[in-house]
Image 1: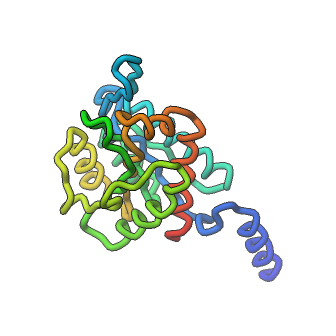
Image 2: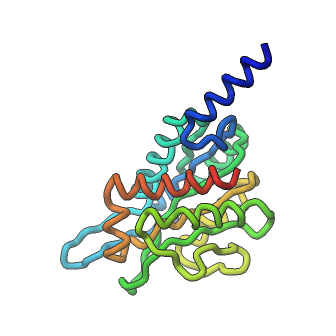
Length: 213
Ligand SMILES: [Zn+2]
């Protein structure tokens, strides 16, 4: 009896694209809210192509949810203010949290991804590194450094509150923030603006998650 159960588990694991996520519970968060929309970037002023970070984050988070659900991984999508996200984190009791964000800079040449982690545990920096290792498939280049400790590298940007708030409100670890790229940079924006690019960012995060477990 137990042998057939073991064989069934092995078969199931073999058919999963991300077998290390089997039995895991993953909480996906999209940064910011419809009220506090995060950065609002544009890649070319004359073209007036504006985007709200909150919408972009939600699109990427949706793609991540889709990838996880297709693989049969238990997951929840959290958005809205910290109280809502923290309540969800407590209720869902996840094994890991990934929060998606994007950045903007007045210097339009500034580009690349960063993965942030809280400085209060040993698991989050490892997950951040694993995700950074898989971001290459997106075509978005790494920032230097690509992996950042919230307590050491805090850049006090306009979205600092969202970083602090998440790490302080959600006590689940590992917990990381994927700053997928700069909406103010043309190269990054080419990736981030369309569904395929958003799917690649989400897939890189999930691959990193699978490598972590
Ligand atoms: Zn943000």
